[in-house]
Amino acid sequence: MKTRFGPGKIGIPPWQQHLQELPVYTPGVRLTRDERARYAKAVVDARHAGGSKLGIASFLGCSFALVQRLLDLGEGLDEASEAHRVETVLRAGIADGTYQVGDVLPTPERLCVQLGVRDESVRRALARLAQEGHTLGISGLGTVVTNPDAPPTGSTFQVRTRSGQIQTWTLPRTQSPHIRNVITTRIKDGIYPEGSRMPGTKALTEEFGATEGTLKSALRPLKKRGILSGTRQEGTFVHSAARSLLAGVESNGTNPKRA
Image 1 (tube, rainbow, N blue to C red):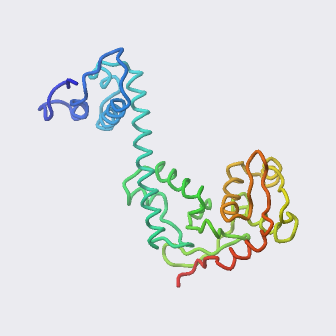
Image 2: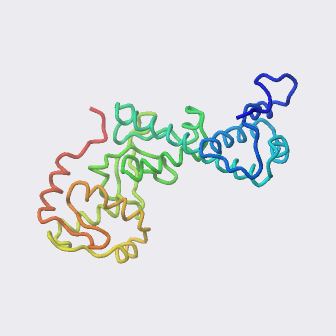
Image 3: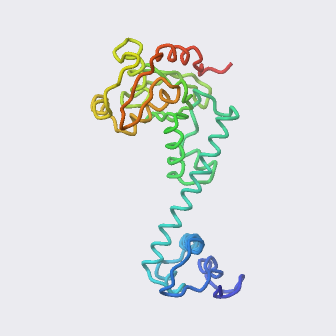
């Protein structure tokens, strides 16, 4: 497609330089998916370089509303890309032992500086890792690396701060590990007998004052180990050998202290 003018045009404002190689926009012609992504990135870059929305719309020959949609799309694509990069870096650090179970991760602010990303991108990456049980965030304290197959149990657990100091953190009662600990204790005590059906989602979320997402996160490691099974339609069932499976998890639990 024809572009407005060649690269390196002298004398144009910096923000226009981000738009100069875009195909000429034809009103009424729908952009393809690739074109939308290309336009969105260029418009976001132009906006960050000082271009106004009206100026960008005038330069491209399109509506103000289209510029706004492109900005929303571009910011979302950029943020998703950043969050994926943060997640990849943290996963690699956990896999190679840079961040071991029990280690407190750098603060979101520090990760933003280290990786050159936005705060929201770091939050999205940490939320994804927490959902899978690889990390646990405690309000006012920080985020610690956890083992999804042997999550923290009890009301407290030990962590290693960035300075190497060992601290004892208290688990909020609404956190997934607390819910998981209560459920595993009930299985051990026979309150939820082996082979029985557990209370439904509604009953458990009301009891713990938690969301369905938090409950799902709490049960995920237990289902992964085969201690619990079932579907939303059928309900959740306790394995017929759940106590033995729990004993195996505890005997293979990870000590947060370094060897």
